[in-house]
Image 1: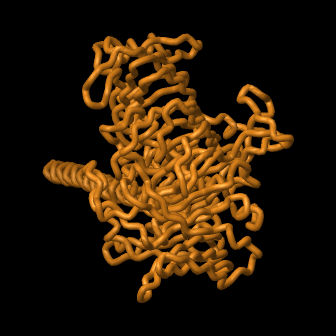
Image 2: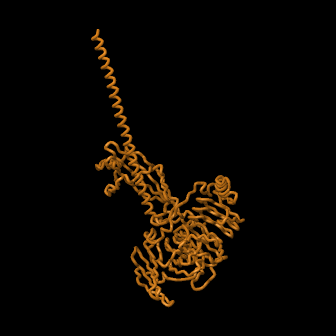
Image 3: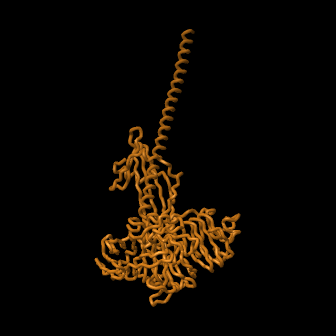
Length: 608
């Protein structure tokens, strides 16, 4: 019996020991698997983050490329920080680009093991309707791969869409506070946007018929805080005039509801999520910047004093080669002219140097006058952009203080003989620009004017009008009767162009348009007709003089709907500023491990 008891005890011990061993083995197996899965999950997460870092790098490249290619014609693109995690770039190696296989490669040193990361960017062409006021879209597709070993890798795909909208959708676009004020009745057609507050007031009546937006407030009143008894009417989407007054502007209670009830979405501001819209700045028109680098024709004026002689050299370059040089020497108040070089048969009187007293500036200004018709008759129609600059212009040291700097020298350029343009014109200068006389008229071939309600208006087959864009420090208008030698009372004058320039808010101005288009003549009781678009990019650097003339012209000013009819080349669209661009994530961080063509390509080339 004793042996049986001992045998039973031994068997029990062995059985229990086996159970313990099995449990221990299972626990060890479970722990091992848990450890394995935890590490694997960590590796997968790490692989995902590494692949995501490539998305971040690619997005940075797209932003940089867009900045270089289209300068500041795009806003500061709002990158969704929640989509692209912040990753410290210093933990990665310097990346390399494989030209043959079109991909970028860099690595992450993970416990002394190099973890490779690959990515590529596919760039699809711009798609647009070739209209100056149309939408343009571009797609970028990004593939990224990260590898930890032969079994763990992550492939991500993202598609980005960039949208551009031409600034010339707007009749008025101001980069700061904008005041629309008129002593007499004013009717304006065209979209209006202010990146600051928008003040509208009148002593009579103002009629506005298009979309009005502001990134701040829309106020019935003057910028100085005064409020006048005139009436302001804005059309709703059905075409009915609805009054804007002190009880329903954006300073009133229930503004959001009132604005929607009155104008059905045509009058919007910050309370409707209208944000600041970024546009180009003065840097784009400075020497050696975007426009000079992208223009084939450059007109450079240099002024020098040699003993008792004042020497002005007018130099025209094409593709940086000198094709026309004219020297004007002034000695004892007498001028002598010499044509040093003329390889393009340009008439000698196409360019000239003149000086006159500008009432606005309160001083003499020197300008290079340009006969646009003669110039365009020689130049290549495809090279429509002309960049002009002179070295004798001096900026106001503090253009924002509303006090003209007596040391400033607002010399610039004067465009004349331009009632008919032979082809589109983009004239860019970092100096003031004067426009003399009728400019770029809407006419048919027989010379008759074309009204805006005519189907031929803006149609390039019938209308002699051509898109004309002037980008400059300031715009100055001279009438048809203006003469440098003697004063003639100004007469009615018509200008059809788009101005992108600096502006000056001045307490002495009696019409908001005088802050946009500066006048040196007393236009009282005369009509100034303008069709186009005005983009105010900031305070003028040169033309900061106070208004020294008492003028109150009748303005007939509206947006030119020809922009929606005239077809444009890709080249011109790329040089025309745009706004309201956006970078939209179409698809982001999409896992494509099972069907990654990028992975298969890299694998087939034994790069993974």
